[in-house]
Image 1: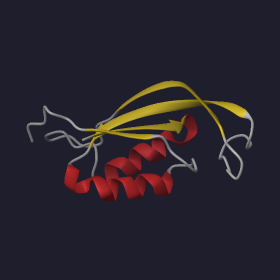
Image 2: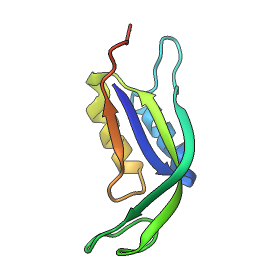
Image 3: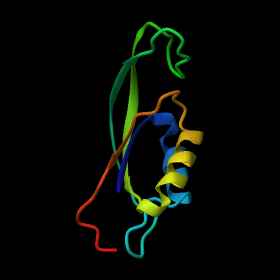
Amino acid sequence: MKIVVFVPVEAADKVRAVLSESGAGHIGNYDHCSFSVRGVGRFRGLEGTNPAVGESGKLEEVEEERIETICPKEKMDEVLVALREVHPYEEPAIDLIPLLNILN
């Protein structure tokens, strides 16, 4: 599986470390493998939210990193629990993408 997560730039190193330490990012004889690109995330917290950035009801823009890494299916639950524990957002944007070309 491929995990894609969007995180504020200042939290990206911590998220990358937790992904690797919990079992993601292994390719052959390498670990801590990931890819990142920066962009702007936009959101508005609705009534009853407690956004980590900005305030409810206001459209926000945050410089974020898109972090991509791979994860074996058998480690996915552990990795997602660890990711959610360290991610600063109340509702992190996490995409899980099945891969068809894994050889290991």
